[in-house]
Image 1 (tube, one colour):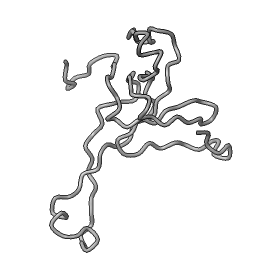
Image 2: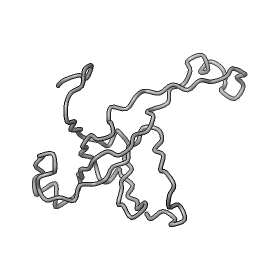
Image 3: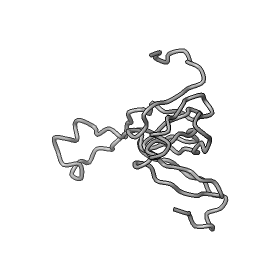
Length: 132
């Protein structure tokens, strides 16, 4: 998908639980050292790339609103989100069939839901990060 050229100079804003990636078009070994076997590369089921933007996360519904219809509520609704695990700068392997490919300002990008990400590679663990 190519976006309208009149959008040049505009900013893409990623929403929800999605990430924007710049795909790594390297050979069998990715920039971060992950080895992709020929069976995976030939079928191109899995792609890898660097995350350039992340959405806010999955929105949560206020539990008190579940009892009444949301449109009948006169309460001001404050939206809360389940935060994303993916971060800008992470390297991600993701399922190609779940991604939407687009071209924006002469760059090939992919929009991927967080659920389609198989693994993240992060440079260093920061304080408070869970180590596996």
